[in-house]
Image 1 (cartoon, rainbow, N blue to C red):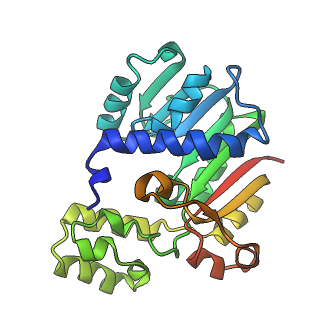
Image 2 (tube, rainbow, N blue to C red; image 1 turned 90 degrees about the vertical axis):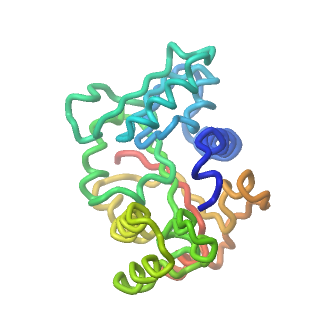
Length: 261
């Protein structure tokens, strides 16, 4: 398991860095990010992605299922100069009583691939968008070298071995058991395999749910990898990014900004 998965403060800083340097410029090209904007982050974790928005003075709300992560988020933001504009909720987004407002921007980075029944989810969250609101999603296509999140494994071999998450489920689970992975890790990675999503599937769902794709970009080297691994960020070559299905194997993350038609 990589150290960053155990050090939540480091992970918080990584999120902040990538969102500030890459995500906000991607969004700001379509919707101006200033202190008049309200933002909902679904699956916010400790809230690292929200720091750049809070710095600007945006009104931000983060929601996550993990009580511990929400507790950490509140601690991390306790002394922030704009803490009065920052809220966190530990709840299930499907609990209709937890959020009763609409937002200029819904934000999700590295979360969609963990959600069961993405069709239901993308239909449900429409209620939280203002009429002219935008929805940012960043996610890794399942088939990419580490799309199975195998970096969570305790085994150094498994955590650094690309593509093996694509193996059939019985073999996939069997390998993890042989290498002594904890039951909770196996269950988590099996769930990710079950909730996997590709670019083509996402675009099909978005189309069926009447979302308009305002902007998209595909990365060969994920912006996250700059701060994690000191790698230079690179967008995917156009000739590859235009090839359906095959592109999922070489794109490490994709950014989308969508809105309701």
